[in-house]
Length: 185
Image (cartoon, rainbow, N blue to C red; front, side, top):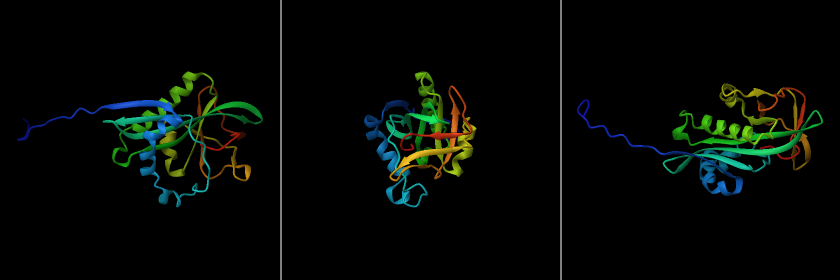
C-alpha cells in the first residue's frame, strides 16, 4: 500500500509475429481499417493509387489484440537499369491509443532484420507522407533523391504521390532511377 491505495500491476503480453501476407490479413485487417477507414482514405493524396499486397506482415499483439502492423514486399526491380532486390516496407500502422510507445519502431526493426537475414535484399525502400519523414529518418532511413517508377492502371509512370526513402542493407542507393517493376507498396 502506497499513498493510501493498493497498487496492482497487470502483466501485459506483447508478441511479435511475422506471417505470410495472406495468412496475416485476418489479424491485420481490423487494425488497418481503423487507422485508414475507407471514407478517410478518400481524402488522402494517395487514395487513387493501387498498392501491392505485402508478401509478409509483421504484427505486434498486445494482450492478444493486434496494435501494430508493417508490411514487407520483396521485389526485383532496377536501379539505373541494373537488377536489384528491393525490400519494400509499407502499410505501417499503429492503433491510435498505443502510439508513442515504440511499437512501430519495433515492427520496422523486425522487418529490416528479416530482410537482412534473408541475405538477398540489396536495400529497403518505403514511401511516406512528408509529416512522417522525421520518424523514419530517426530510424536511419534516408531520402531517395532520384526518380521512382511504378506500375499503375495506365502503365509504368513516375511515382510522386509519396516521398521515397531508402535503408542500407547491402547498399545505399540515394540517387538515380529506380523502377519498382510493379505496384508500389
